[in-house]
Image (cartoon, rainbow, N blue to C red; front, side, top):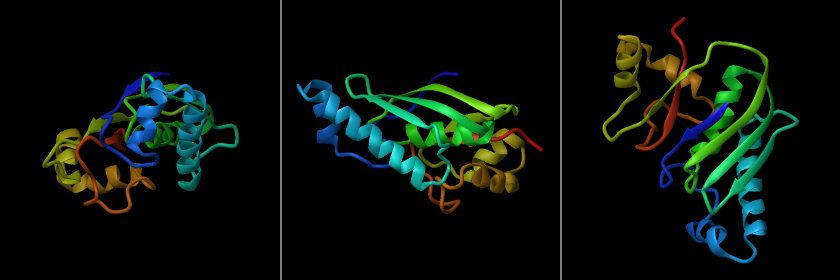
Length: 160
């Protein structure tokens, strides 16, 4: 539980930059925030990782997403947090989720320019050929091992 940091300009473009700016200052910020929260909720639901009690709130003034609900396991919890945070316009995710089955937590890695899953696997596991474990740990957000981008935050699961 706590806050996770993300790169505001990186990630899925679920709402326009004009909407994000409007949420900071508009008199109808509550409506704009609710629309952004609904877009993030819809994205997580589309990834088929949302628990039935998933709740999303968005604070456009601070670019913070609050996520609550009960995930079936730690891996799903982390994927939900990453899906919410890897959205353009989000700088922090406030994790208020619980899990049904406790498991060891993963590490997180923010992709830098020039990073590859193989290089990340070498850094964390000492073996570039273990990139597939990182790819699998980040499905369904990743559709291909070569489709990562600077600013994206990835799960690095504990070594098996």
